[in-house]
Image (cartoon, rainbow over all chains, first blue to last red; front, side, top):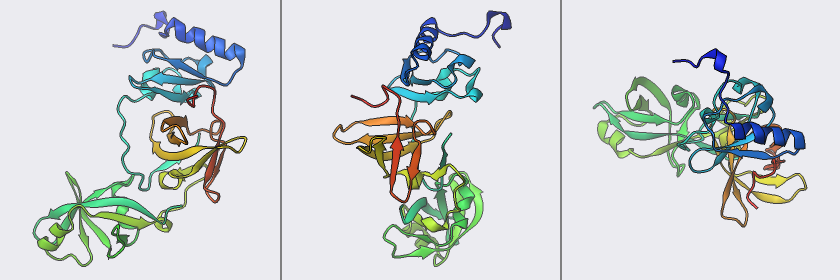
Length: 92
Length: 169
């Protein structure tokens, strides 16, 4: 069931505080968070978050197309290395 | 840059007519047949691959020089390598994982930090796993223009400008 619109997106308060502080300081730093349930808001675009996956913080550079998703979606809890073969990485 | 790239492995015989079960490591599994003759790891044999079907464990295929079930069974576990030159050229700002792995990692001041150990596919942005010199630790870096401004395949290095807190002290 989807979340009621009148409630607005859910974000843990400490995530908002940390993001605000980092933006005000203008420092290029990783914001370590444990809140995988928080929604990615437009004001997070351009910041780099370290999202905890139960083991370590996975760095996520927030872009516009991530808005509305949860942080946890970008920090997989299982690692599969696989084979390189012909796979390509795109620099965003 | 590596000369050969592992693109698949033989999982055993398929049927009794000399076909093999092929495990493809390619992004598009059936592309394995398009990369020309495939070599063994020791480079002592090479096979032309023609795919005959898709099966639950991967692909069924005919290999040149393999005509019987016994010959196919003898190849079980063999890894197959394609020439790096057989892969199509990558687009702008796109890099083969195989080309990135093993590159030296430098900071913007020119100091060497480590080596790229692996490239991880991640929903947001791909991640470079860097093995740090003198640490025995690894660090994950988002593969973005801001964090990895320079990728020089000729010089076999990448230059990184990581945000504070990304690399261990």
